[in-house]
Amino acid sequence: MGVCYNTSFLMGDLRCRSVPGEKAHMIADNVNGIVPGSQDGMTPDKADAVKENARTGKSSFDGMLTESIKQIEEKEIHFKKDLFSTVLPELAPLEIQAPDGKGAFRKALATVLKHEGSAYVSRDGGRGSSKFGILQSTARDFGYKGNIKNMSRAEAEAIYKKMWDRSGAASLPYPMSLVHFDTYVNSPVAARKLLSKAGDNAEKYLELRAQRYTRLAKLRPARYGRYLKGWMHRVSDLRGITTEYAIAKNRLNNMTPPAPVGPVDDRTVHGAQDIS
Image 1 (cartoon, rainbow, N blue to C red):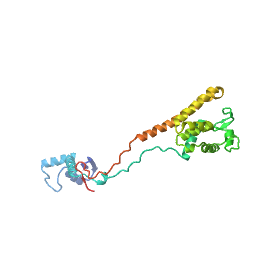
Image 2: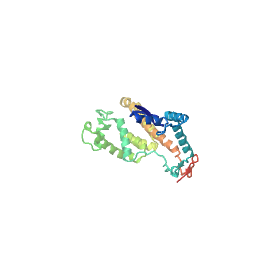
Image 3: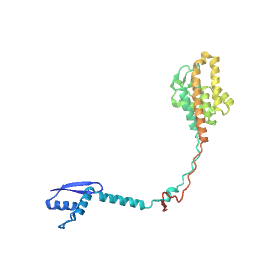
Image 4: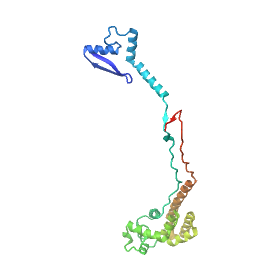
């Protein structure tokens, strides 16, 4: 005989299984509200009510839900005092970390190599062959013995490091160190003159450099005219670097650091009590 019975009022789990005849009747009677061992069972009204509750699970579910809500409403909500007494560390003032030392050289070198490139040039501005932007004569002046055409990047970087030290860029603050070194690579004599005129003003330095290029192109267009566009692009790129740095630094200087958050003791939330 098959019989179905509700195993969980909360989940509505109605299960059916096959059991022997007498046992099946006992299970069915129990589910239907008939007390086992009783000849007459319950009264018809009570039996009907039990049968309905067993079928829907309403009475048990509603009762459990009501009881749970009641317990939640009556129970006090407690918060640990430590949750509201944590002191956040005071933030240090924001600042831009300008490159210095070896970092300043590496940054300046990356900019110079971006401008100069790595190609071998047989006649660079009528002054001989070059590679990585270094003339054969300049490389020889810094101790390089081989043919410039065979120079490796590591050898070029070693020469640029010697030029960095000789130029005096290491003693200048960033970004003036970058501007001066890039100019020195292009023309050491001009770089010294521009630095003496501009002082610590990088924008003035670049303006004087742009004026020099324009003047050279006008005085000797056959020789320098072809290079004017590249020179001015180089100045423009340096202006972008110095301007971006100045804007970022100015923004940080004008920012107000957030105030540190102090402890908040004995805080109560909707009647919650401190149990620390």
